[in-house]
Image 1 (cartoon, helix red, strand yellow):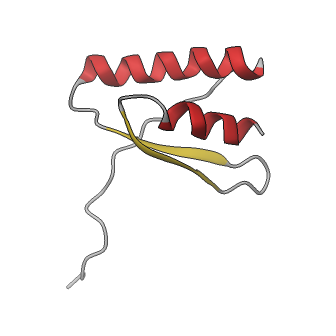
Image 2 (cartoon, one colour; image 1 turned 135 degrees about the horizontal axis):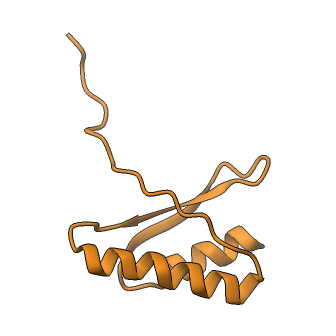
Length: 76
């Protein structure tokens, strides 16, 4: 239920382009896509998400920011 809550909170935020649960074996995680080009909005998204998640579940939220790579391509 914690992951479902996190997906709902992230997806409902204006800065989030989409969110879904991934993994879920021994805990799983949520992948949320957000535009990091506006640093202030991106950091606001992270801090608001951490705050609302803790209020909803009583648990702290660990956020790991990653950058999307170029995707699949032929290596020559």
